[in-house]
Length: 266
Ligand code: ARG
Image (cartoon, rainbow, N blue to C red):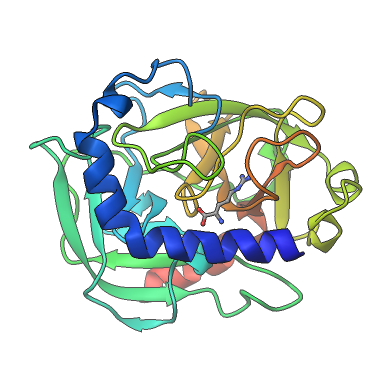
């Protein structure tokens, strides 16, 4: 619990210094010299266009295009429901510094009303001022059919626990971890809300995970038609990529109808 709270705080600190830290890291040769095979934590660099639905949000979170004008992210990445023109979404690029990036402002934020309650619901929607051009969206899982197997995660968050935000989109694959196993890991994990959260990670070895700054980004897999489908939203973990500390993701299928209903009002 303490660790979980700590990392939530850490994300907020990271957010506060994100503009400076990211701007600085972009200019440092140390980042360019990073081997492309290390990083999310334990991932590799995504190809331009590989995950066209990926969104980077200016408060230091990830997201996914639910529609061309609505981003699905985490509730803990936003502060409240209401008009909000302070968020910038960067889309269409793996390189956040690319001149081909589309940068679009928010107009409104919808934060799940059950976030922070016993039923959970770490999800939020951000309406954009205009639709993105030429990008595909990421459908969300509406049943539990895809809540198992191997998942893909991606983001511009830290590549090591406590590390810097990334200029280039990183990706990794993580295996499903059952609620019972996840809850049995000690630390913050007994707090897991099984109906609202889904765990993933290399249980005994660790080494691959999402991390601070990936929050709000999607966890996804292939559906029966080999199309990407979103099953999770990066939410929390005890540290990053530690053994016996899986990543915890909002269970999208649980909230699919609420998400659709909220989106229809935006
Ligand atoms: N809460 C973090 C954020 O705001 C995400 C943490 C994910 N941690 C993990 N071990 N998978 O960016």
